[in-house]
Length: 246
Image 1 (cartoon, one colour):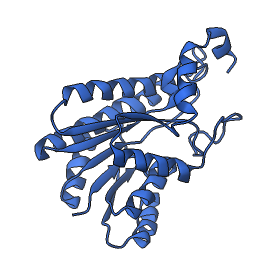
Image 2 (cartoon, one colour):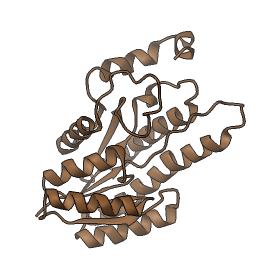
Image 3 (cartoon, helix red, strand yellow):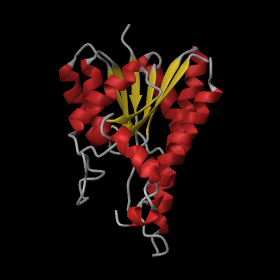
Image 4 (cartoon, one colour):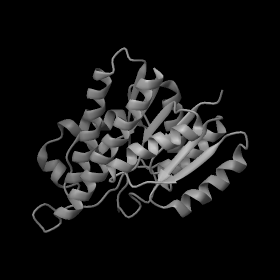
């Protein structure tokens, strides 16, 4: 029987590219995002890649936490159960602290932390009822160190990573795996406005790596592994003066 996966934030970027890679591997998919029109387009394209895979789509704003639980239940029913939940939905907005931009910070935390937590919680309830499952959270290398003008984004990605670590401990020996992924710069609409994107890779390459890591059920990994596994360690020990210039 084909494995099933749900991807939030699947209308663009990593989520969209990952859908194609998983369908190529024979997965049936549930795709969600706020833009249902784009999801329908992706569904049509994905179906051409593997007509034996079932693909269902649903409009979902993860900040509507009540609807997150409803959506997981509905989509799991349509696919006959979920094997993998990929909490990918997220936003990135620059925030200058003390400059009247707190609304951007609030929206970032609401989407990247609260929305992702609701997604993980809803999926966990489903997995516990089935006796198995795999939770995948998309964090970021931004979780490794607080960066200027990105305070809320860094905090959100560190927060969801720590939340998933706690979930892993809570679900120990429950037959539910937890994978935390830390992408570096992947060419998506989330960051294509930035002047500097070191070690940039294409979204297709990023999704390929992510799909492989998910299938390996790794506990955690940067994406790609090199050079971010080394850069991540360096970020943690750089002096604040150096960080302030980034």
